[in-house]
Length: 388
Ligand SMILES: Cc1cc2nc3c(=O)[nH]c(=O)nc-3n(C[C@H](O)[C@H](O)[C@H](O)COP(=O)(O)OP(=O)(O)OC[C@H]3O[C@@H](n4cnc5c(N)ncnc54)[C@H](O)[C@@H]3O)c2cc1C
Image (cartoon, rainbow, N blue to C red; front, side, top):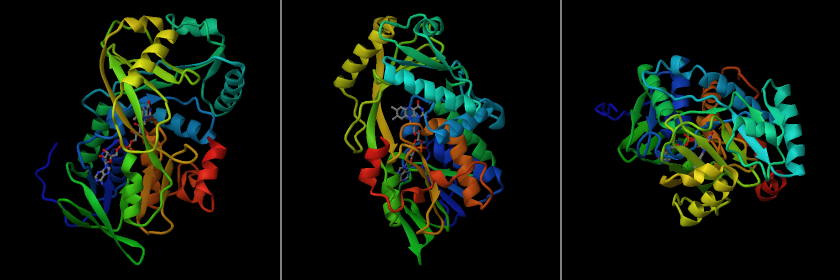
């Protein structure tokens, strides 16, 4: 990464965070002709949730907003290699997601979900256990009641995808400063005037908070209360083997997801609720639970050796939908956070929608339900209970 540029004294736009959201916002802004864009990252690109994530891309959601955001993002990912003119490989593997359910309640939810998804043009379908086994032959269907499958869901490499956006943004003139921490944001009369970092202060009127698990703290710097919290989620990777599994397999009742990457390794994680905080530890409890559940659902995986396990932060919003928003309190302050565990797959639309908002262009999709104002007047604790 080129770091020999002098640290800027002024910028038109300062993006905080060098994860997939930050690089997508930077590239989209620059592509639209915005100039003097600076991305500030406290560590290295992909250090946050992006480099720790499963990078799965699914359109099979129960909320219309997520379905549409994911569908539009997939349309971008299908062409990302060319659109970003990337000389590496984003490793887009589009072999679907198989979601298995183990009871009648899940079956009913699958029915409703597929109806909604099909009405939005998403080619998902419901399957019997036997049909599911035809797609993933090593699936143990003893506990499987029914399943859904969408063949256009998939998976990318989070590091090379971030790198592709980064290099494309560089070519558009964006400046990146890594190992640089934002410590404060300056305002005057409720308008952004600057960003303070440990390398110096940048005069600017626009700040974009793409700080992932640390987005709340960035909001506090300007007095904007963003109702998000962070939570550790663990994941592991096995040794690689010959290809035996096409789709990502998910079970909500067993609380796991598991996919085989193009290199042959299996990547898998669990959705256990953790207390809010910033711990990214990896635990023996996770390893134990993960091993038990994955081998009950996908038995041959029990023979594989675990190579590495790690943790990363989910940034949770009260309704588990992203916050892609301006601020009605502080002019020039924008945010892309609260992705609640699915911000990687939404990044193309995050960048597009936020850049349109910043440049006062008409939105490609309705954005009111993504804005911070949707929580206005709500008791967040009660609201969380009602939607989760
Ligand atoms: C285990 C795990 C599995 C996941 N699996 C999936 C999946 O399969 N599909 C999916 O879509 N999503 C998944 N996610 C969620 C996904 O990783 C995130 O939603 C997404 O990566 C968020 O990207 P981001 O750029 O917004 O945040 P991040 O990638 O966290 O980037 C934010 C960056 O901001 C920087 N930063 C913070 N504070 C400051 C500061 N003060 N100064 C400078 N820089 C700062 C951080 O260092 C960080 O690099 C998963 C997450 C985890 C943890």
